Length: 287
Length: 291
Image (cartoon, rainbow over all chains, first blue to last red; front, side, top):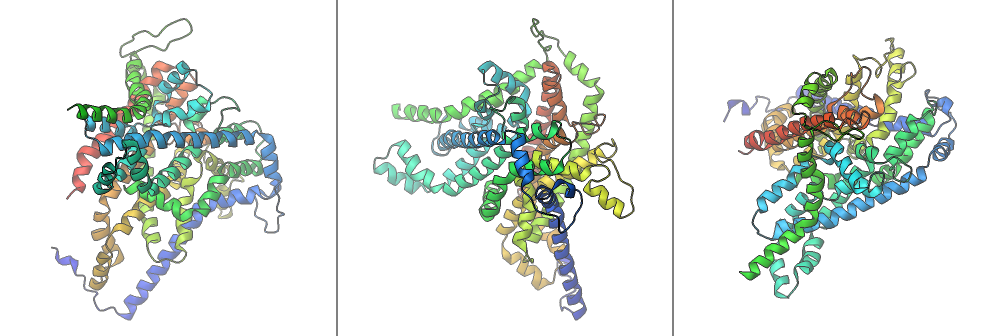
């Protein structure tokens, strides 16, 4: 196509090889420097959280280790309630999403009906217009329903996820027709086909979506901040914000300890399931 | 025929729960917001009345609105290309046989799993005047200490850095997935031909990654108008609105000043921006990537 496709350096001279080697070393160094830069915030948080506060801003290698910051943080705010709220919220949203979105995806993947394409486009709109954008109006809706300051109210706008419907529909569509026909021949009902043919074959996608959903809602902040205004409904992120913005005096050790507490379970889970985590994010992205 | 109708009804019934929530929290509020934007804010004992374009005129005359728009423009213009470039670099590194690649992959991806609100607290410390980490390093190198979050000229750049740090690793995943799906024969052919790594990237990988880049670009664009957690925690839009973004300002107007009519107009602005992003994706960019 273009003559430049065959560069001249065909026979590799020792000098060229040396410079290649040098470039590749330099590139590795760059990769490592960037990685170190990227985890500096976490490394710092660990340093400050596990050492007495006089060492929070200076690196002294023989500084004594301590758990006191975690204990003070835990006692300074109702983190136990916040944890419980977050767990209920994240689990509740995931359960509802799995049920609601599986049914919708099954309908889109298996049936032909009038208005199917229009309805599917209406679903996809939510990929662009996330509930965060519509906070003002959605807050009014919650007020009308009497659900302000409840965990149910925080979760409600997320029960139908366009992302999940899209992901599951794509997966369901790849399931071989023969399997479905065989199930029909054996007299399986529509629901039995969904339960025994579609869902088992989509397990990896369910895992992928579950990880994405859990990490998204564990970290979600703006909508819960708006809706919750008491300990009973505050998830961890909002609790942490309330904790670190009230007059603590700026004790970095306690704030970093609280920060690690809130992200701890997700962080530990990520360390253990690193491979699955990255792979499921990839799967969620390419489908 | 009867059987046909039963099947259709069944299909609609399966969709019903999802549509109750979708209509209730996406379609209905979007339309209701548009209508609200022509109404005044209801106050105690006074219902909302039709005010025509009044809210829009107020918005156009509001310097804070324009400040937020300009900030958001720079925020998008800086975060999108930098985080995409970084994420491609990360993906190329991690996709290669590089020493410690699983550590590198973890390090790059880590910010994605951490709550923005939690890491924002750590970044506040990095940016603290005097003894904050960045200033300690600057002073050790003989530079003057800066008030990163308190100086109107520096604050937007400071929150942009945090945003890039947060999302680059997320975009890396999509590039990594795309790179792994490329046939290894391209690389072999390039090696036989003696093509340099840069040449191989520019002429082979970059064009083949185009669909991924479009996907990431759209996500990055949406993110640029959606990321406000760190603004709320780190700067509250200040000093002097120097780090206010559109969604942040919407949050302030809606939930600090409780001005529903004006907040609706701001929501409409965001909806229009997102609609443009969506149309851009479907009608222009999509076409260019399908050869």
